Image (cartoon, rainbow, N blue to C red; front, top):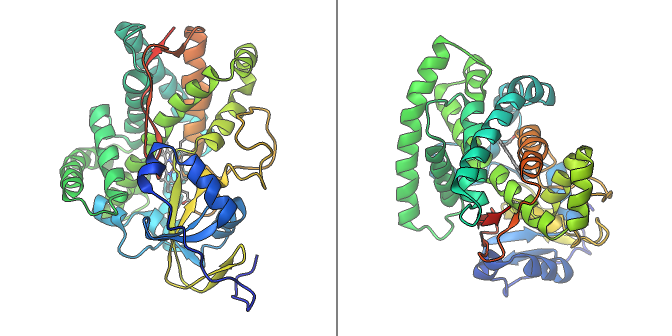
Length: 399
Ligand code: HEM
């Protein structure tokens, strides 16, 4: 892997066959073809150079000085009404990230947040029990409200209705992915932005008066401009609901199809952490992240010119057989090094430890502890959606 272009480097191949509708149905066959034929290729449909192999994605993550996060004309900035840290490079990015880290490190997750994650999981488990087997939907009755409530707490937005926060999250994500420029999506983003800003008026006034351990309070205490605080709270709202929500349903779906591994987990709860990590590799909830090259660069033998928008397909990198043995098998005992589901560079997910604790060590183990017979309802099928952000929109369950 070199950074400077060389005479032997190939010019960009084109993946003109890649179809976003097919990707939304099931992206994995297309990812496999990309990795096989042209792991670095221009996609006219996605309007980006796509990097789909592990080597290329991890190279991009290790070189933020070339793969800039300050992507021009980005939809994310329009969706949220400002530029959050994930669209900035260091040192600006690092300055905004540091205060958020103060309450999201493993020690703080244990001391401050784990108890809340536990009582929230209990609350929504009881609600799902009231809905009853044969009717319950693990996504709608448990995963979505729980992920949203956990984030309301972490943000200090305690008077917000969790399902409103989940709706804002969905709209900001739809705006970020609105490459086809659909007006109806921008309209939804605007409504959600206004509602979110109104809620933040109350939250910010309260936290200025009575600071606490929340993310928003940490950002305010750092002396950050209020506009930046709002942009970064909206970033956390976009990134902090869907992914933990999807990991709850992904794990139950996977364990339904892996009865031997489910039995091992029920017998030895110490294995849950590695089951969560393997689940994030197998179905990575953030399929692709975007960067822009600021210099010509050679990735896996292909020259990518300066000024190119690049999509690094983390979900595909995580199924690369050059990195993982038998990558299409779900195996909680897998070694083979870290996967890229949370990113790996300076922008590595700020909520990684929170998600691991809330989902992998609390919510899903609690589901199986209380409902050992939990399974997908064989009479009602699940639905999936998306590829840039992918997960189940419905997972009917029984127990
Ligand atoms: C399973 C759950 C989650 C997954 C798979 C996930 C994945 C990711 C990924 C792939 C990135 C981008 C990394 C990069 O560009 O290199 C990211 C960034 C981020 N995530 Fe998460 N995330 C999850 C949960 C959360 C939660 C719960 C929060 C909030 C508490 C959160 C907050 C953020 C923030 C603020 C960033 C931007 C970090 C930066 O720019 O420095 N995430 N996440």
